[in-house]
Length: 283
Image (cartoon, rainbow, N blue to C red; front, side, top):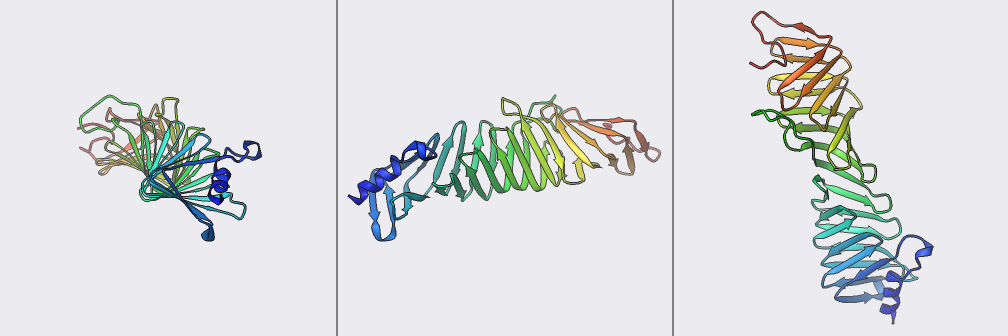
């Protein structure tokens, strides 16, 4: 009888009292009254609203009223909500707050966009994800292809922490970032990426302090950097400077044209020794 009451509390709580009820389905169920927990085994599917969790076994803890508080997933976990999918080795869902915590190589995939970190906390109510020690793979527009040049394939971003707002189509990489596309590497304190409806990076803006850029023997620095045109261009402003060997180039704005191996400078001033190549020019 207690097991039946618990199952009813899990699956049939009135929707009018708050979020959608939690529905747990499995092959087996063992209720340990003294420990106030229930073990669902044999393959488990848990749903709450449009969020679905799948794993081999679930341990659900409940209170004195048989209301489930925490759902702990044992074994590989797969979570889905809308077009996004999350996977990890372990997971725990807080039924009161709607927070899903994943660890063990947690990965969030939405279309061609992929975020993998050390930990992942997903808010099912707000559709936001927070990750730590992250490597992001962001789809970007293709640029003209020159051998060895940047501008092809995704934009890769490493960061200490990430907040991903799926509804706003925005990802904030923070705590020191490294963004790489082809042979171009950007380093900055923070990078905020915005996506278009297809999921490609539309614009990505640095913040929090100065930036540095490296492309083969070419180095640059500025106060700010912006990926534009689907990450096909990188624009530096705020005292930008480009150096290559003993040569240097400054201006009001410096634009790296990814895939074309070309740099454009507004109001340029060049300083280079006799016989040295101008930074941004091809040999």
